[in-house]
Length: 425
Image 1 (cartoon, rainbow, N blue to C red):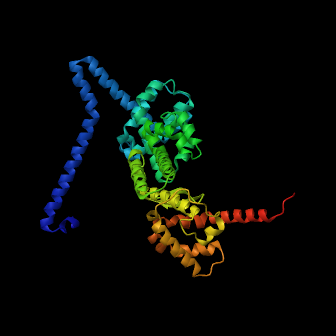
Image 2 (cartoon, rainbow, N blue to C red):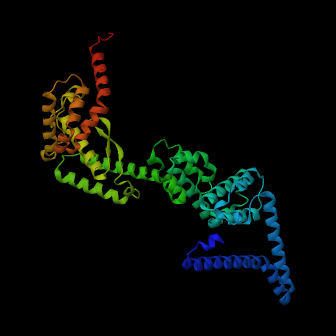
Image 3 (cartoon, rainbow, N blue to C red):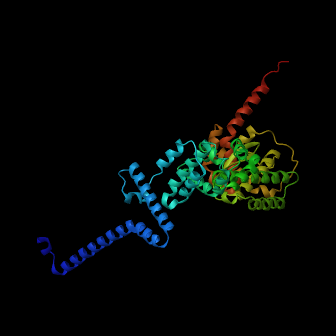
């Protein structure tokens, strides 16, 4: 033809060879398809010569496969055999609809369901997780969890991995553990004790009181660890805080020296190695409440050594201010009671940095026009870098002034006004 003649001589033979190769491949594929289709029959004929019973089984298997194919075609008339063999094109919607509507499952169906779900290569992990969740809901909805207790126990690890994987995928999308639990409480009970779940749910942030429950939940399963790992971190953080506060309180029962403070620091550092989940909190921002000048102030920290330092500094500076060992800032003269006679002496070496920093802060406040607590807060905040370079714990004063001073001032003014009023007598 014209198009063939238009092909250069060197390329013409190549094109002809390519066409010949393509034709051979097509013929080979056709022969393979015929061989595949006739394979059961040939197998049956061979088996018939050897053993009639074996031939019967082969023919029965072929009839079963044909019946399954006919049923699939009746439900999905537009689906070709190639599409049926494509795993990525499969969907579990018919299965989930069946599980949501059925009122019973027998053992054979349950085992078959778990077996199908376990073949994640064919079904895909996402589809397997959906089918597992709906299957478990079906079991619980029909109150079959006790009937199939042994079967569920055998599949516990598999159920755990499916539910854990599903929660972790939702957590990436912003779903919180409590939100997931509210929707899947009955499923969580299959892997964790309900008493422990209830205790943590109603703890109201009192993590120390539910430490035992949290430990059992995180040890119960991968899902428990994924759901309550954060709670275990908070439990460890609270226990660490209590240990440090106890050591600091014991320190203030007698005169305070640099050696005693050093011993407390070493003991507190050791606590970070004892607590199971403290290591996972290192390097993470945490909001910590610290008692300073009889008020709870919140500071943001990332290191447990800094937390120990701030708690020690809050205790030592608070006592020194109360006893007149440290210069008071102007607003502290308004808000705090008069200085008391020293009962516990604090070694001057421990207060040198705080004394120098406070002296500079007073000079800064006196050099500018100040009419309110807000003005003081702005001046000190503006110079916070210089102040914290002298005393790294000065962030306690900044937190006190920004969060607690206003309320304390109102309470002080109210108290003094009431004191000026004449008594009824």
